[in-house]
Image (cartoon, rainbow, N blue to C red; front, side, top):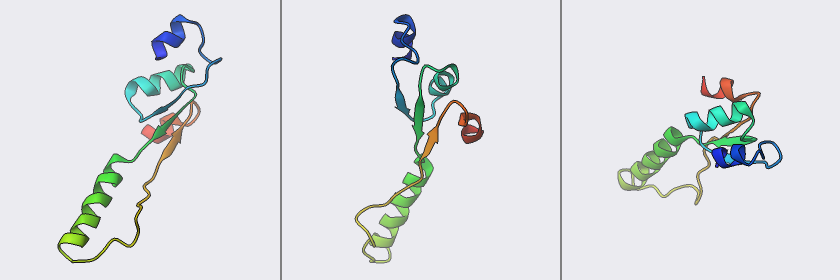
Length: 85
């Protein structure tokens, strides 16, 4: 996708939002090919899943909610370095 935008010289005129902070995505954020990226929290998602399943199976407790919300980060050209370290 990024390569196609560059070849068509459409970087900046077409706004692109991606998921996950892969190295390629970070590079495209920095060079302006991608406008924003949504960084999910895979550790938090996995942790919460196992925690809730453990509470259900081991402790016999029902989940307190039908949904569990985990953290997301919005990566932009100006803040991506602070999000990915």
